Image 1 (cartoon, rainbow, N blue to C red):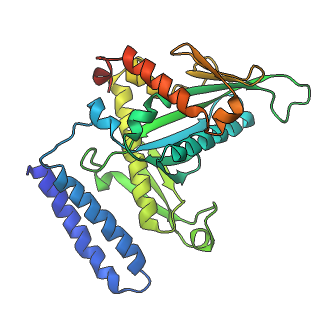
Image 2: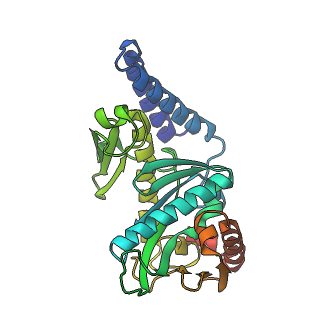
Image 3: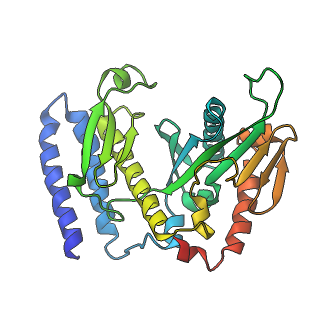
Amino acid sequence: MDDYKKTLIRNIDAEIEETSKLLDDPDMSNMAKDELERLNREKNQILGNYNQQGNTNDEDSLDNRNIILEVSGAAGGDEAKLWADELLRMYGRYAEKEGFKVESVDERVIKISGNSAFGKFKYEAGVHRVQRIPTTEKKGRVHTSTATVSILPQLDDVDLHINPQDITFEAFRSGGHGGQNVNKVSTAVRIKHIPTGIVVTSQTERHQAQNRELAMNLLRAKLWEQEQEKKHSQISSLKSTQVGRGMRAEKIRTYNFPQDRLTDHRIGKSWHNLPQILDGENLSNVVRQTLENLSESNDGVDSQAV
């Protein structure tokens, strides 16, 4: 085992020893158990990867990862935010129907776990444009709005190590749903990565340790995304799975409600019955055909782009 992994193991063992002391404290025991579970899982991951060191720059290894899916409204004001909520619901329902595990991380951020999640969803990321009459439109005019979908692979500390000295940690009371415990106790967490200024939050779990783990996963994913953008100055092959600035002209798909048509501009295909697609019912055909066409066109190129 190299010195880097030995140092990681020593640090984790030290954390396990300190955390174990809290098991006798009735007020801290539950949190301590959750933290010990996380630490042991992380330690086993490092030890298990010793003889099978995965290269996160290899697309095949990325395809097997769980993902963090984030949707944000872009051009279009309030309508864009509503559109982002609908897309998040669509992907969440679709993932559950396909047998994936879906967990909420933060507002418009979910974690999707299961067999080859990144490989399944990687071409879903980008700018999604909607053309429809908003509910607030009184003159019946069709508006155009956009939302960006980001698909990020979940990385472990052994894949992308974050120096504890490079982050600041803050616990706060959740403002969302989740019951009395979530809203009255400081279970939510906010983590800032000092070198990059990236800030992530997680507030959906009932225990602070669980939210911290989810937030660290999100931070690693965002650092990975930033690194990819540094490596590739132009959008090409797998880089097309990352989000643009959200302007109306930057799009991978258009959802045209007056014509009841979804079009993927990368592969030149269209599908109808938008209500069922947005309900997660007919999205499987869209995802499958997109994946098949883009995988074929990017064959031999993707591995260079990641």
